[in-house]
Length: 225
Image (tube, rainbow, N blue to C red; front, side, top):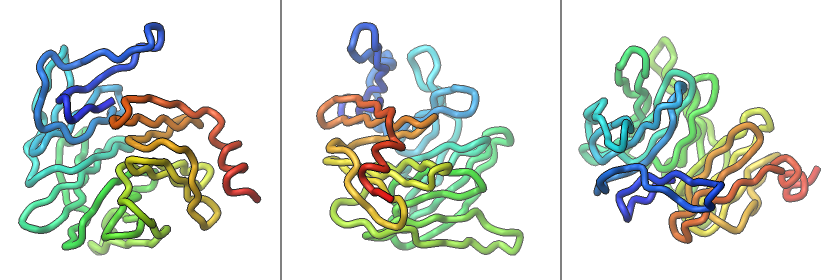
């Protein structure tokens, strides 16, 4: 889990029921973390993308502005960067080591989640979540509204493409968008991740790590038929 206030990346040790610091020295400008397709831990700093190795961070890429967050899918990494009063969604090819711009906006781009098919789920603007497609051969970028968001902006987004459900979380709770409506899902918020039918919530406010294994059953109970 990421602990920006302490400048640490932490690993949970289930046998000892405690967290272990991974960085030998705290880093002041941590923004986000994720794993690439080969299991390498990538760390987003204010103006750099780095890789974790042996307790230290190795710089991989200088970013064209102030970084906000990132998400990985397949061989690509997607990053939100702000520069010159403009928000940019960028794609970084992990094999070709090439950075390209997907989308630019004067309106804020918040939490994102990359999904299959060259799409990015993103909180964009002030109160809605959209699906943003990578530019076509003509250079056009299609944007589709998914759902509105009431209350605080999402801190994190995770998608379940198979079940067509979308999870988003603020500092207080986690919500699910399924079958066309948004409903509360779990009374804890923070950074979330979905994989293999399980939803993990990492709350830096309470320093709790929760894994929910019965996601489909909870969606049925929450949303219903």
